[in-house]
Length: 256
Ligand code: MG
Figure (spheres, rainbow, N blue to C red):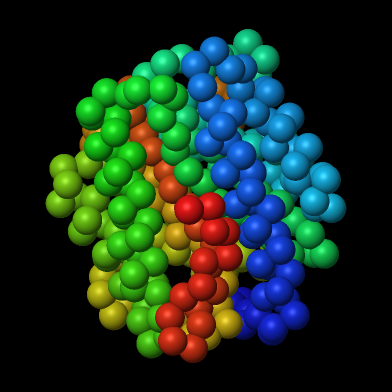
């Protein structure tokens, strides 16, 4: 069921979104060559708890994966697309690209956002991939206003990404968000104009394009969580949670 959020619910979602944004902004300073990825997770969870919220990903369970997600953030490096886990042994190296995805819940309402960072100077190919993915997110956001459809969002993302010669991850999609981290509707990164659900003021959802430099499908590793590109090509991921307003869109996770 798709719920239209009331003003007091939206206010709580702004608070959750602000915390998530603050984690991603903090990462700008923490991400550098030689840093272990568990220390990023510890810093993220500390910020979330000090803000009076809880880390939404930690302990998250998905049907078909035996173990709950172990950490506050997903840390996905290079060919990892999403849902990578941090560890003390896993260090960032100069030239890597690392996607950080974070969720927080406060007063029963969720925030969720993601962003790919360069670790020091990166290759032109990796810089291009990040730029294309970031712009894909904004192509999608550009379609968000009452009267447009979920298909308009997906079409804008897909057309942009394929037009840049990159590969689009089709197995994972954006999603409604609010009292749960994942609600209806699904927000795919592909679609047809004027198709699917019509957007209305009060809807809240995440748009999150996942883009690869290659074109093969993705696969999951044996931990059940980590999703990687099948051909080993690089991947990037950017996400905002947002509210459909009377005249357009409000970003609920302002990390920019
Ligand atoms: Mg999400």
